[in-house]
Length: 285
Image 1 (tube, rainbow, N blue to C red):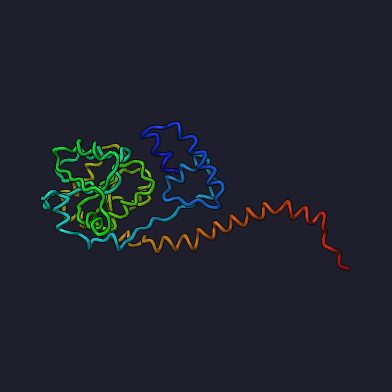
Image 2 (image 1 turned 180 degrees about the horizontal axis):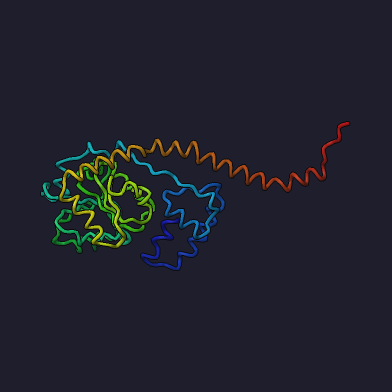
């Protein structure tokens, strides 16, 4: 529902935004706790006064670190993604091909093969836009093929400024390749300031020169991207789904139960007062 309220204005039916926010408020105010995947979403919900600030909690990122692993790097997949030029630098993007992803931004990136893994309403237009360029569109990949696609690239680029979490960024880093991403939405929660330049790079949204300044060294320097890719993998090993689930079970559920008990006590208070007034406890001499 939140995603619809963010993406609707980029397409049509912008008049639906206000009704969507009313529904969002109704749903969240009925909940005892709201879990969000990024601080950016928490900020949006607070700004819209969707629910009380203390009822919004961050749900730590999680990734399947066994499914997305450097071991899946494949020469055959790299041949496929690079259109038969595996020795050339290879940029990979995985995700829905929608206009809101700002993928036309990648058209300006020079001297590299680009593989678009995924499908969506913007695919046909993108294929026309990248016609004559070293770009490959694979369509949807799943299972081991998807794992191979991530691990077989050199750099993962994420130009979208509207990612609520950026799960594909987690999967790319877990696969051992560095990411160059716009510093927007939920991406800074995955690549915090202290990790920028160590595991991956952030660039100013919409600033092509800044993006290029971060991307070019990775494309030209194999040792640098391997070092950063290894660091990215090590960082993601700390955030597998087992750890994320443990936090929900041990911390977030306890918080939700506490809020539920508090709400129940507030609802019962008037009835308890009436019961004491009309049915007083017997005096014991």
